[in-house]
Length: 66
Image 1 (cartoon, rainbow, N blue to C red):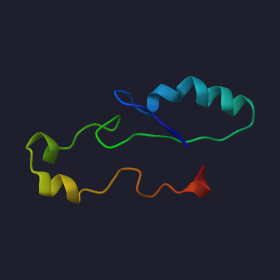
Image 2: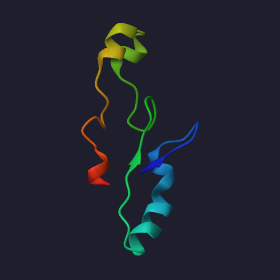
Image 3: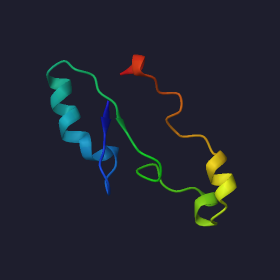
C-alpha cells in the first residue's frame, strides 16, 4: 500500500507501481481525503456535516486486496 505525502495524490506512485509490477509485486496507491478523487459538492458548499458523513471512495479496499 502506497500513501502519498502532502500536496500529492496516488497518481504520484505510477512509476513505482509500474516497477513493482515488473518485479512481480502488486500494489495499491490510495488518495487521502481531498486528494486525487476530487472534492465533493458538500466540500465546496462548506456543508461540513454532509462532508463528514460522506463515505470514502476507497472504503471497500482491504489489506487482503493489495
